Image (tube, rainbow, N blue to C red):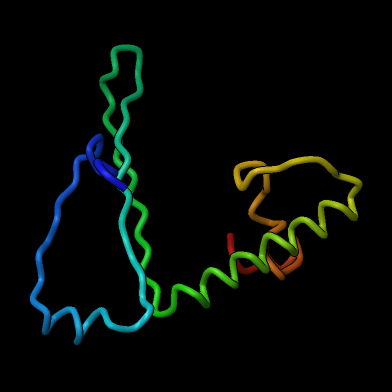
Length: 108
């Protein structure tokens, strides 16, 4: 994908072949997204939010995400919802195997 990172502030870290084999030869995956923004009448408040992902097994995680969204679709269908949805349209409570009561008791 030519120029994939061209519009991003990107840092590339070069590693040795030895480090690649030692630390990255399995199927782990990771990354970080940093988003900045400003608020206020005169944009006087600056904010940073960071998302970090460190996976031992990318395929296992991906499978878990697919199952969670299948769970969500099933729950939403039982409530009479239908139509096309994106990940932004699905509330996190639909993704969890826990009940709403369990989520409030243990996650809040």
